[in-house]
Length: 143
Length: 143
DNA sequence: AAATTTTTTGCAACCTGGTTGCATTTCATT
DNA sequence: AATGAAATGCAACCAGGTTGCAAAAAATTT
Image 1 (tube, protein in one colour):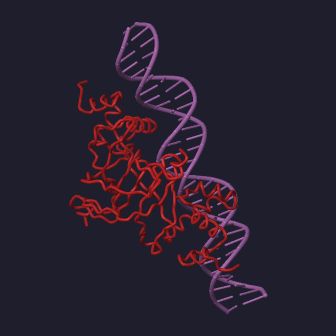
Image 2 (tube, rainbow over the protein chains, first blue to last red):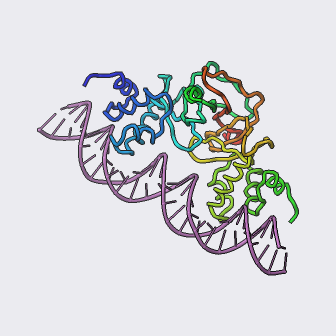
Image 3 (tube, rainbow over the protein chains, first blue to last red):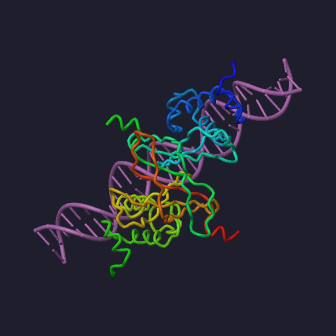
């Protein structure tokens, strides 16, 4: 089998490029929004065990290939990290997460300037993230 | 029994002030951080069924008394709404949620100016929320 | 004040997302 | 081909949360 793009991306993050992993990474790359375990399970339609999907997500996240996206429905959703410098140690995904009220999908939008903010004295700030809610482009056009 | 503050607050949100509900609301008011179902269950120590706590939280939220606080560990946490104008229809809690990496508690901090932001065309913005992570005052002082 | 209706509570059972332990398979290495 | 390490599948489990229903408590009517 030839070395594909996906293959390389996995290797770059020290993840052995098995068939399943390549398939799952492809799903992430071609998806416009964050994916949940259930999304992937449906898309894969029994190509593998559900536990394997959980472990793949876990591994991908540890290796800085994907990041968890906050979702107020209490289920984990993930999106590929745009920033290639993300590692197991540090995620640098300072962008906006936009949740569509209609379709429920979450989009990672690039935002020009992250706001700076001042905390009350005594608090130490390490990370900041911006969450927005509204109607996405696609749903907007349907109305 | 005389009409206490708690009592009135519940009535103002059309919630019948039963003993359990008053106790739970008191917990929220006196707590410095967001509470999970587990937190409340522990604090109440078998004073009532766990389902009752779930339903109380549901009710409180519907009536705009508390709001869900995003937590990346996939469990629901709630805090009292500072803004008294919150209703079942609309929550107006535009503040900062600060998660402490050490104690895990989430604090609602008042922030002067919510950043304004521009979305890509086609997106409709309805709500925005700011999440921060770091070390809280108390944990900071312990080090 | 008794009767009726509505709301709240408790209990049991269930659902769903996620995790763990272990045996088996696959893959890279020698 | 043989060995060792990592990945997969399976079964069982766990925890947070929900649902249905009967009993209890409050509010309302007569």
